Image 1: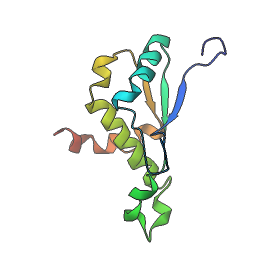
Image 2 (image 1 turned 135 degrees about the vertical axis):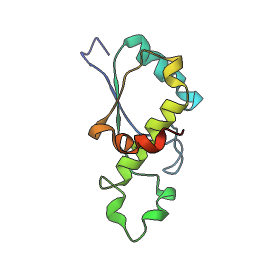
Image 3 (image 1 turned 180 degrees about the horizontal axis):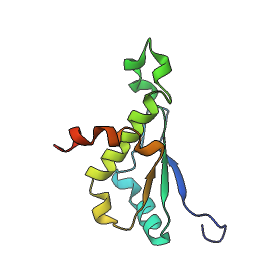
Length: 117
């Protein structure tokens, strides 16, 4: 990373494994080497929004304009951010720096409701 002059990493909310409906979420144990490497390199990671998996888009039927940047991007990225916070990732890797774009997606708006989690 440093050899090429990169200043951070860029990942989608979730990569697919197998098919389009099988996600690997960033808080799952299989992603531990990724977080360890980020902490060792001391670079931030930007988590880029992504639409919900196709098999999770039933709620959007008839309202397809909501799947992408109007709502789906925000909801998916906010859930990924919450999973990272609740998973203990930042306790295990206190130097990891995560950037969630678009002013935190839905998270800042939901802080009052999230105070009970």
